[in-house]
Image 1 (cartoon, one colour):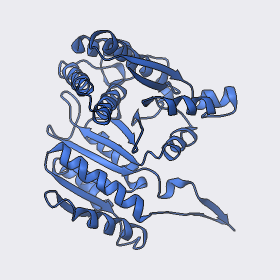
Image 2: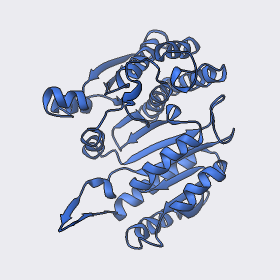
Image 3: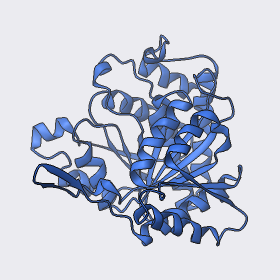
Amino acid sequence: MYRISLITGDGIGPEISDAVIDVLQTINDNLGLKIELKKLEAGDTTLRKTGRALPDSTLETIKKSDACLKAPVGESAADVIVVLRRTLDLYANIRPAKSYPNMPALGENIDLVIVRENTEDLYTGMEFDIGDSAVALRTISEKASKRIAKYAFKTATQRNKQRRVTCVHKSNVMRKTDGLFARSCQEISNDYPDIAFEQMYVDACAMNLIRQPGSFDVIVTTNLFGDILSDEAAQVVGGLGMAPTANIGDNFALFEPVHGAAFDIAGKHAANPSSFILSAKMMFEWLGMKNNDDRCYAVAKKIEDAVYGVVRDGTKTKDIGGNKTTKEFAQQVISKII
């Protein structure tokens, strides 16, 4: 039995959470993989109710689970996901970008992964007022840089695609911080002679993601650059609705959709749940690897094949020009899982 914690979030969060709950229940009932699901509260609504965006009880329940699924939250995101990443040392943010049928991708064969360092950079929140100016402190360490570089090279090995890692930075301007990151990645590359290694400035990478997205395999980069580039990559393959995310540490992992809470369509049951469903797929892959459980790998493949089949058939939710509700889309996915 796998104990899964689920933060239902804000905005469209509860709606896409219901879709994922339906998928997990189907897996529990039909595929021989038992799941105990615990719904938890965090985010804007929880902040208004309790005075804390991430209550201690929620954090403690997450720690006792085998993995966590998190729907998007609103303005309190920094007090939820950033705290969870740092508290649980979820140092690797993994964001695949893959083109699916009938989605407005820039190409048919895009399949890349952005491996983003998740604990440092400007996102530590160390900002100060100095007179009439504001200063943000950027921290890049050799330890974190080498750790994320190793994860990127291992990812390239496991994917067995182009077997290439692209280190993205801006060391020509930020010579100390990005220089350290680039040198760390270069050093780790020596341990993986069978994986091609290249370096690219972040502005050139942003351009090439649009110009030739199929040329990328694994991109490894710093926290801020990874945040920006992964949203760009999601749009390159058709939009945030198809973009899952994993936050992975040595002993725990949290999975979430890339997109936000989309308050403008909340309550309309129009949101595409694919990003969250595919995040669950990534969760099962991680559980399979962590526990050497082939059943989890089989479930992950069934989920991805089901989503692929649904969008191939032309099924779309209302937010992307279709006529299906969030729940109806999820039921179409479920019909292909069983």
